[in-house]
Image (cartoon, rainbow, N blue to C red; front, side, top):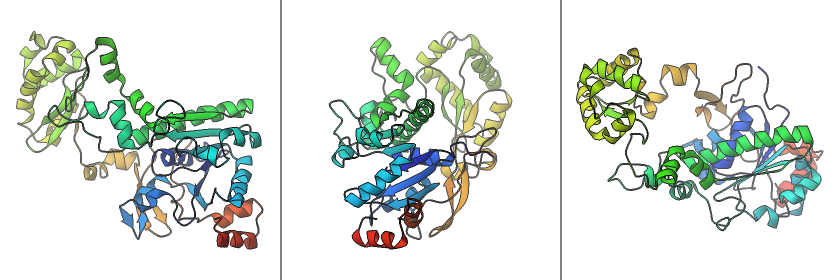
Length: 395
C-alpha cells in the first residue's frame, strides 16, 4: 500500500476538535504530523472524558498518527525552534482566535518569508475577517448561528443541538479539503497561501435545501422531526420492538412500498400521487405507513423492505453500530490500537477508503511531549541542549 501524503509534513498547533480532526485526517493519509502543544498543560482536550488509565479518549481519537512535542511559543527559543520546523514543513494548522499568531510574531505574512510554499490552514468560529472575527467560536455557536439548531428537533422540542459536535467536524473536513487543494497548487507553483475556514460558514454550507427554501420562497424552515423537507415518505417509523427509517426518494419507490404494504390504492390516491403532494400530506401518509410498520419486528421488517428494493435501515444505538458486520467488520470503522499508557483500546477508523492506497491508524496519539527528543534531534539539537530547554520551560 502506498502512503498518500508521505512527502507532506504538517505542523499542528490546534486544540480540541475542529483543527485536530483535520490533522488526524492528514495523518491517517500518511502525512508526518507534528502536534505542537504548550508545556505542562498541552491540548485542553487532554482533560476531556472518557478516560482510560488517566488518558483522554477524546484526545487519543483525534490525535492518533501524530508525533508530539511541547513548545513555548512565547519564549524566544520556542519561536526559534518553531521557525526551524517551518523551513521544512508543507502545512501549518492553527485554530487560535484571529490575531493570536500575529501577536506572537508568527503570522502567515512572516512565515511565508521563511517558506514561501507553506500552506497556512486556520480554523476559527467566524473566520479571519468580518465584524464577528474576534468572537470565540465553539461548536454550539456554529450550530446556533448557522440556523441548524432552529431546524433540528420536533415542532414542540425547541431548537436542538445535534448529538455530535457537527460544526467542528464540518470545519475540520472543510479545512482539510482546502489544505489539500492548496498543497497541490504549492507543489506546482512553489507558492503557498492561507486557507481560512469558519465553523459557522461550514455549517451554513451544509444546510443545502434548508437555505434554498428561504431564499427561494421566503418561508422560514422549522423543526420537522425526522422527515425531510423535500421528499416523502423519508422518515422514521415505529415498529413492534424499535424504530426504522424508510427512504422513498421517488415515485417508483413509493409505488413499491404501497404494493409491499398491500395498499395498492395509495398509488392513485390524489393526496399522494406525486412527491410534492406526499410532502404536503405527510401527516396522513405517516399514519398509514406506521399502522403497517407497528405490526412487524424491526429487523424482520427492514429485511422485507430491502428485499422489495426500497432503502430502509434500523435506527441503531452506538452499541449496535460498533457490532455491525458491515460498518465495524468489512469497513473497519473501529480499530484496535496500542497506547503507551492506555494500553489496548479502540478508536474510530478512517472513513476514507482508497483502491490502491490506505488511510489507516499507524500509531497511537502521543503522550505530552513524547517526541521532544526525537524531533529536536532531527533539527540538530544535542541531548544537553534539549535537557536545558526542558529546565527553562521552553519545551
